[in-house]
Every structure is written in C-alpha cells, then in structure tokens.
Length: 210
Image 1 (cartoon, rainbow, N blue to C red):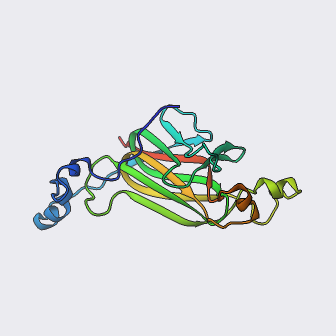
Image 2 (cartoon, one colour):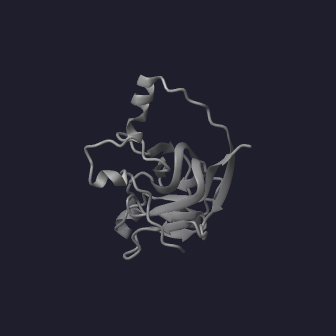
Image 3 (cartoon, one colour):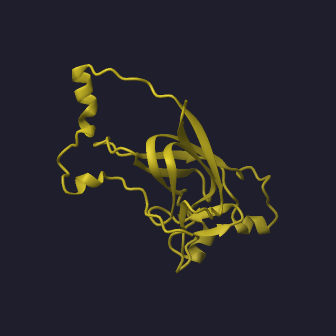
C-alpha cells in the first residue's frame, strides 16, 4: 500500500508568512470592489468508487494504533479506523475533487466523519477546507452479541452515509469515530469501542465540458 501524506489543512505559504494574505486570498474583496465580471463554470461530474480494503495505488490507509491492539483492523464490514487523529484514509486524484461520499457503520452509534481536503488553490485564509458530519446512525454488531445469535436483522444493525460537496481539491483525508460508551466488555479489554468502519468511498471529480 502506498505511503501518501495526509491532506494539509494550512496554506503552505503561511508557514513563513502566517499574518499575511496572498493575492488570491484577497480576490473576493478586490473583485467586489472593482465589479469584476465572472462567468459560471460547466463541468461533467465523474465518480470513482473505491471499496474496502482500499488496495488502490492512489489510496493510503493508516489503521492507527495496532500494538497494543485497540480495535483498529480490517474486518468483514470494512476498514475499522482507530479514533482521530490516529486512523485515516487519504485519497489523491488527478482531476479536481468536488464531492466525497463515505459509507460505513459505527461501533457505537451515532458515528461521525471528518474530512480534510487539500485545495487546488489556497484561497480560504480563515476557514480551511475541513468538514464534519455527526449523528450517523447504523452499527455493525459487536462480536459478542453476534456469537449469541443476533444478526443483521437486529434493530440497530445498519449503515450510514456522509455526503460532502467540497471546493476543488487535489487530495482528501478521512477520519472517523463513534461514541465512547463503555460496557463490561470494554473494561475487560481495557479499551473503548468508539470506532467507525468504512466500507465504500466515492470520490467525484470535475471533467471539463466541451
């Protein structure tokens, strides 16, 4: 599996010039003041679909902490990431990324998905291209109730979907988790079960029209 650096969240130019804004970061104010005309953009969306375990040349999976074992693993329901910031999945594309969909299931719902994107142009000086969706219902059952006879027909068993529309980006990093609600098994294991298991990632890229 390739080693890909995670999406940066700070303009690299700002490492040395943190208090200054670039020309492009000031474009909105300057265009508004000058009345600069704009033209709308037309493009064709193309969606690339990726399935767990995500053995693709443009994807890097970091399970997170594995020694000692804290629950991060490849399993029957997908890639169960360690809680942020330890576990992450990073995807790069050749064309500008404009949409991301994450499908999976929480260990202890509700789950959440964090998405960090590295933009094509660094023009968001005060916001950063970062997103979060909370309240994701649906869980993959723990092995203990499964071994006692419960299955996917159980009322809380299910999946969830987080859909993001993003500014044009070259790279994205996904992190995820769920509720740190302790039960007897957690105290026996001396670890929590606050993970999220990712099954499918769909990345929509922008293709020029005409």
